[in-house]
Image (cartoon, rainbow, N blue to C red; front, side, top):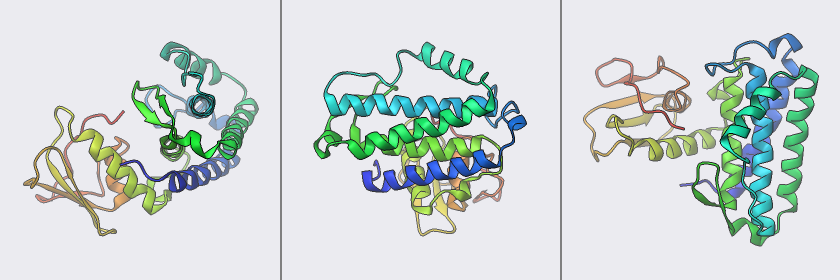
Length: 240
């Protein structure tokens, strides 16, 4: 279930502020260093976030005007823009990340209330309501802040957003081939989830909600999690 637009907008705004704080701490020499994503430098991650903001702007304009405006011209163009964007000087990347985020925030403020219920086509091909776009942006901001590998972690995320993120990922992964059947229990939050297709799975995974989110998203091997047998949790399918 997608979180409410109001909650998602608050998380997206907080995520933008969080990212700016990370940018302020990054020296120019840090941009070319590897990120936590294989094959991508930190400059790749930041260029992706800037182009993602433009993609969300395109979808909101679609919802606002009724004129189809795809998030990206094509997957190939998206990838090419990230690759070329990562080669820019750090100062240019900094400005781009901030300016694209500001453009998106300005359009959000200008959106007519009725436009949020209009349907657009996400880059994945799924038909979504425009009201889901702030949630997609909030996810991008916070998850990729961790991927920058400059000190951010899933513990930085607002706890209600972490719970919503686990809700989202469990629903997505649960029907994937090779997904293990597990009961997930947050030790720091009165919440549990069933992953997979078995209503009462025989095995459990417990740990902090931030640890559960990081593991489910493939950003952690689950060192801070435990199964009923005292072992680390099994691998799960790729989320996106």
